[in-house]
Picture 1 (cartoon, one colour):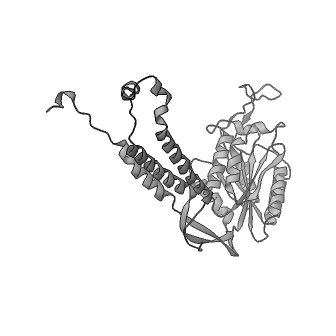
Picture 2 (cartoon, rainbow, N blue to C red):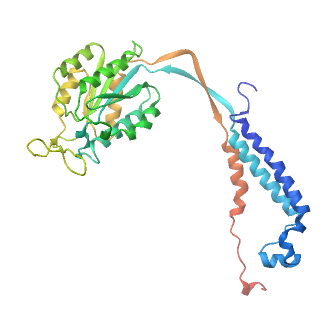
Length: 343
């Protein structure tokens, strides 16, 4: 096989062509021994078409149908084998920026001041960000009272998209929001990335946490080259925090616990982390803005001598031929009016 010549992506599919021979042998045998079929014991041969609503095909008709089936089968098998030729060499590169997403899964993220809920909106925002990402390695950490690494920093966005729907507030037993622990875990993940890459953390939260020394910790991360961006989820008006069994959480005085977006607190944290703050909305601009902020000042690094060959798949050509051959079977035959047959 030449470097750019015709070949099959999955040549083992061609073994399915061998099925044509036993089918042909069965057809030949069924013709030879068809006169001893059981149904012939109950009626004369010339009466069978009237009883069964069918007729025995002539030899030429049988083999004509067989050849048509063999042709269609051959084309379908060739399509499954994946014929291809011509290719494009693509230079591989390493993204110049890393982003660790911290997703708040505390109970307050179940508040429905944004529809359908804060946690659902947060998952949608992360999905949009990962889907629109082209030049950032992304990792994901979910946190409440403890922080749990969901995926390490990776270039495979599909790994995050696969686990994202299963992340909910039901994953935590002890309620609370400990952002400091999550920031430490994110710093550990980023420490394993190339030194020349731009390191970022994205906090997706409603800001319903109060921790001493938090702003100082964020400032230290910024001094070490790790920027903190924040995506606020919720509204300033807020809403009651759902509990279990359809009830809302109440405090020691029996009052319903309310949670609102702590926008001022989150803005201060983003400022201390030399990052960007914005409130989530339905548009794509927030994802694009965060991605631009993550890659700001970074430069993708090409990998010398590492290229990937992308072949031009041609499986659709035999499929087009199959559709053309099947097209006559969908013709609508015009039925003659019995009253006008003799005209």
